[in-house]
Length: 594
Image (cartoon, rainbow, N blue to C red; front, side, top):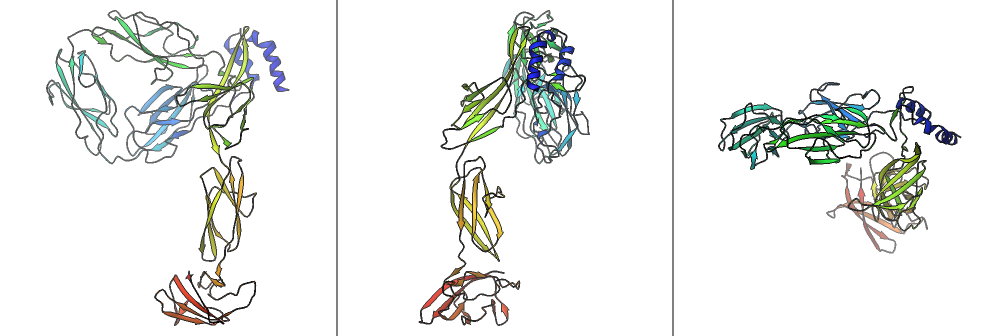
């Protein structure tokens, strides 16, 4: 009924409503199923983790329908003294540029960024970093790079973070190991230095960067050198005109424009979906103040960096700007319920599917309601091959696949899809085969270890095919009697069983006894076979491992208690020799366990 009612609403009302302002569209969508907003949990390091490396990246769960994330890091709850509200776009990972302080509780605050509603500040989570145990590494790279030529005299010196560093000592000179420009200055935990005056033109510049921490300074760091260009004037930075920095609801095919810079001969333009990516436009060189039309995805934040340049070099310190699109499938904010509404199907399909080896009818079915579906196979290079356009697909090969579900909507007579997809992995399971069951005889109990011919996603049960089942292949402290073990493939590829018959005697002579005074198995004695119940043994002699006679028993006695002359003997193996009434010998050994 709900589905039919929704279809009627879509068919009759949607074309008119799409022409209304976005607020009315949002109010209309309140009749649809909404998704309660949840904050993400830290994935690595997890909340409460200790001894976390100081150079550890921070990752968190992706939250459906959230257009972007803002992260703050501090040394107190809700603090931002390490990182202050860094917008990372759709990325769910962040690496602190200068690392983290050692042996410190780090507080992480994730803010959910939205275009058309107030941001949601999530509860602070924390973890504790490990204490440093050694001096830091040398810096892995610098700008300008080593042996670079024709470097502008007003260049800044910057470097990438050294693992384990809490600060840097910087020297700059015009000779190897020279320091007449800057002499062993502590820069602190910063990754750049702007010389107060221009560097000398057409000169070899030598730079020593020594990372340090509480333990000491990095050892053996190489000197970086580069050669400056003739004196020239760098261009200034520019700023966006359309869209302006921070603008939302930007059309999907805009022409990007920025202010002209007087002495610039061109501009380098990079655009990405996170502050760290250039996956839309990578350092493109343009000689005017606008881009060609770029088709952007809906519901995303984009990060753009524009760097003017001329024959003297590139503008220094240009900041990154952002804009956001808000069209298509949502998310739309419902001001009444406070929920986000998205038109994309919400997927419940699992991350891993297991199929049975040798089964030619391994059919996989979609788990979500949608208007259409697509299934793709991924090869080793990530290329997609379409397998099916229905709700079912037959797969008989392990590997990575893509599952896509979509709904079809109409906007002013135009049909478009709102789709969701996920990558899943197909694994192959085999019916279990028991190779053997190892039996360890303990004091008054047995331990089993079930060994299968090949490893698999199996579970194990004892004496009952219906379980309960456990993940461990070991059963401890079970009774001294015969048992049946069951091995079941968790993915439904079969169950096998194995009867473990435990013969505790050799022709009536026990393999062990436990003289510990508990009243169970305290005596070692001959037990006539059940078949006859009669003894053909006339006398039994017991020896230690050196052949010394310890006891002589009649077969009808209660048995040996493990003592000689009132002294208990230690745990060990002991030997016996028995004579039959026909004067034949029976020899063997047994264990004394306490």
